[in-house]
Each structure stands twice: as structure tokens, then as C-alpha cells.
Length: 381
Image (cartoon, rainbow, N blue to C red; front, side, top):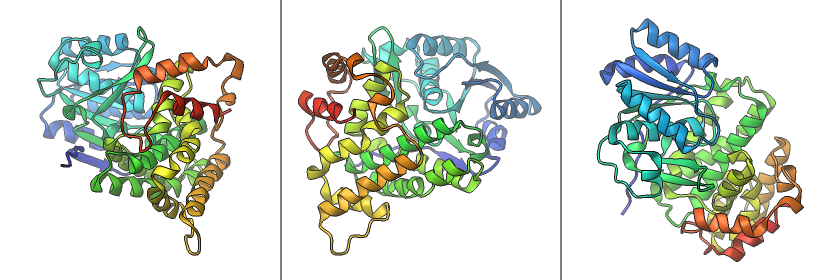
């Protein structure tokens, strides 16, 4: 059986954020809880002006930062409920969108984030209307029913899942991504590429998710270098947003080894999520290669690798090398030594954290174990 969830509406294109008032009017919403990373950002100011000119009340919440803690999310949910907002709009990347999903859900269901993250509290009420405006082409959070939240008290990230948490409306406007720092463009773009590849090889992949995976990889791999060289290239920016969105749709099938290890390592050492996943992407592919060789051949074809007269192993290795070429051209970090000295790395502590937070995940095609995690961690110095 396939159970696939996606947004009700997706609006793509230049100036698509101008559609926000008409969307709110269609849903008959009167007061917005506006979650942003930077209230001075041009995209936020445009949205504020749109709300004001259409006499739509709003409350702005700008306390969500990268890797937001539970307390910040719980404060936002309480404010949203107390202000009687009937819609949440997230303007940002994965951290803002994921936090806003939980705010929307708790505003309707009550409780605190940890109830849902660790204690299994059921989601019984439909969250208030949630609109996601993606300002990065990377996480695909606008397309998922998952919120990855950092629990500072416990010291790890853990996801909250529910079908109702997916954004009702996703808005993909390339203009809002133009001002991104190059490092953010690289990190989020490589995160999306990792989503596309890992969702394709996941044990839970299906005919729908695989379709999204391959199209996402095609769009992302063919445009990330163009965006790196010319940040103002709007067509490439739009293709990156669409590729990121498709990859977000695909990861309903789950991610694999690069995320299983990269997510907790990033949380422990404060490495941006996209960079952490990039570091582990091609090494994890080498470790998984014997288990999903046919799938990696299809990925290599998307990356432009010729197959005639070559063994599957040759094709796969050339595909991995092509990814490493892309990483080099866009100056993506590929070693943990880019962030720390090896003597500062506590292997056993990291392995304990991975097993606690991610060791239960069964999507990787090669069975995971503490020793496999150790082998991967030894490869990235």
C-alpha cells in the first residue's frame, strides 16, 4: 500500500508571494501569525505591506532561529493561541517552516512540543491554516509532514510526524531567494540533492516518491552550479526551488545513512544541517553501493554519466565522482576537519547520540549498526 501526502496547493513563480491575500480570503482567514527569521528581510516587509493593504490583522514572531529549541516553539504556540490567530504563515527556511508546523498544530491541539516529540500525545484536531513561503531551495520542509526539532534538554534532534502538519499552501517565489548568502545557497542546495538521492534508495521508496526523487535530482544537479556562479539567475533559482520542493515530496519515503549520521552530528557540533549532510553524502553512497547498485546507476544517468560499455560499478563510481566534482566547484565542505580538530571529536559520545536519536530508522538499504556508523565517521576526516 502507498500512502502519499502532499500540499493542497502550490504557487510557483516570480512575485507569487503577492497571492497571499487572495489565499487568505479564499480560506476566510482574518488574523495571521507571521513566523519569520528576520523581520527586516525584504520578503517579510512585502508580506506585511500586503496584509496591511488588505486589512488583514497579523502578529509577527521573530524568535525562531536556526535549530530552534522547544521553548521558543512553545512560546510561539501559546502566543498564537492567545492572540486567536486563525492562520500561520512561515517565511523562511527549514527551521522556520518546521517550527511553524508545530506552532500551528499546538495552537489547535494544546500541550507543549515535548508531548508530541517524546510522549506520543495524539494529534486530534486539524491545525489552523498553515502557509509556507520557502526562502531557501534546500530543506523541502514546505512539502513534508515532518518537523525536525532540537530538544536542548535532551541534547538531540527528533522529528514529529503527522499528516495534518503539511503546509496547506506552499509558495515558491524565486525572488525571495536571490539575496541568500552563497554559503546558505550551497548548504541548502546540497541538502536537497541529498534528499533526492536518499529518498530514491530508501527501503520505503515507491513509484510516486521515486518519480519525485529523479526529477528533483535533475533540476537540482543541473542548476546548482549556475546559481553559485550567478546568484541573480532567476530561472535557475526557480528550478532549484522546484527541485527542492520535489525532493521534499520524495522524502515521504525517508532518508538514509547521510541523514541518520549527519543530522545528530550537525546538532552536536552546531554544523549547518545542509553542510553536515553534504559531508556524509558520497561516503555513505560508497558504503551503500553494493546494496542499491541498480538505483545508483539510475542516479548516475541523471547526473549525465554514459553507461555504454561500462559495468554497473563503473557507472556508479563515476556518478559519485560527478557529485564530488559539483561539491568542489561550489566549494561545499566535505570533511569534518572543516569544522573541528579530530582530537575534539568524541567518537563514543557521538555514536551514543546517533543510536539514541536516529538508530531506530530502518530506511537505509544496508542494515545500520554502531560499527557502520563508526566506519562512516572515520571516512570524513
